[in-house]
Amino acid sequence: MKLVNKHKLLKLKRKNQGNVKLIKAIDKLILDLENTEWSNPHELTDNRPDADCVYGGEFYFFNINVHRTMILIEFEEDGEMTVVWVGSHKDYEHTFKNNKNVIKKWLTDNDWI
Image 1 (tube, rainbow, N blue to C red):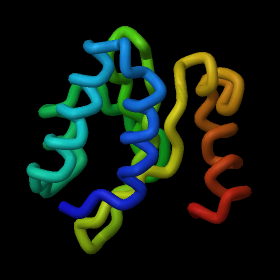
Image 2 (spheres, rainbow, N blue to C red):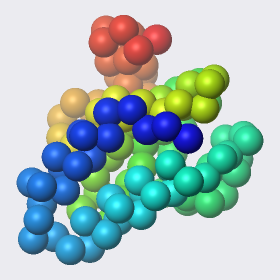
Image 3 (cartoon, rainbow, N blue to C red):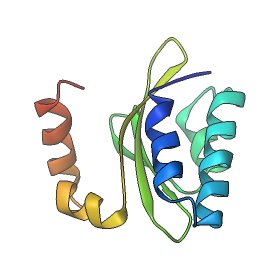
Image 4 (cartoon, rainbow, N blue to C red):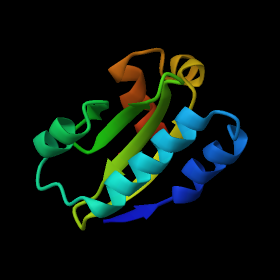
């Protein structure tokens, strides 16, 4: 699968160079996303228990490492994935208020849905 906006994950790695566990977790996530063909959302959540569907079976947050970095990824019909949002758990709480309605509004306001 093709991972669009991968640079956002690589930027997160550069900003957290001293956090070896987070770096490894980001590398594993990238590897999993690029090298695994999931035929349905259940396969994704079975293989990545840190994945949480937040809207319509297309948008997922991944909670990686104890750092609790949240990564919102849109899975498109053509097998392409786009990294939409990356941030710390604190950033996630500030932006999305731990609320799926706020996530939906953010996606709408930013023309993702």
